[in-house]
Image 1 (cartoon, one colour):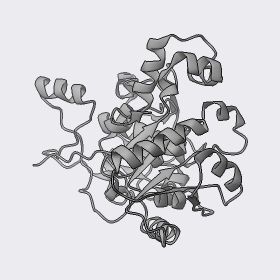
Image 2 (cartoon, rainbow, N blue to C red):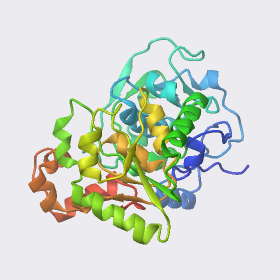
Image 3 (spheres, rainbow, N blue to C red):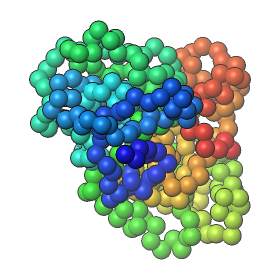
Length: 348
């Protein structure tokens, strides 16, 4: 049959109604194909000769712990889904992602309370050891002798672009979330008179002020806006949108992003994310929510060039969050940006 290869660069499916084929067990590839797959850093999901039923596969599962917020949950789901597919196991999703994303077409993904999942079983914690942003092939971390009889708790996810690509899928929004996000976007951009809209998501959640030191400064947004207006969308009218978290941070955000940025907000983070990803382009600031807004937009993504610069990381204090307090040289800074951020994003 024809392989189903789905990249995160296809945001249309994440924003609504494009249906995907039902998931099937992965088929071992030839040596040459495996090498090519590793080179592309993608897991190819192909139809199998013998259909593996949901009931038989769910005798074993990978369990995602319910912690964190939507952006972190997305990294967990995508990274752990790649591990589960590689080992021909089921993935039990979190309540947060089940409320936002539609897993109906994926027979090996189940939400809390859905039939087909076994009772509680002993768990092996898969805690990967490298940096939170570093790529590590988690598909090989399950001990072979333990695979047949126990569940595994997937705690070792990394906020890494290649780990997301390796899942090989784009999970679509739930219909209600997609509809609300589209309506919010259209209501916010109505009357702007713009040919193109750019999402500038800047905020970091309350209680995470330590991350502020990694956020871009006003100069970055000035450079980015010039790039969008003069190079990416020349001879077009460009408008800008953001989210100010129920308008609590509107004044502060305007002082950083510049004038004329319109804010959209909703009580549900998934609706905000779905709305922002309707934009034609985006900037990445810092944090998992901003990462996913940028990843699911339809066009160019710009980020602060300081994230590739060891001097900036050290002087800003951001390097302590990236490297755990240790010093880092230029090669380390470039490696962080190359692994945490998709390769088609551009530093400015």
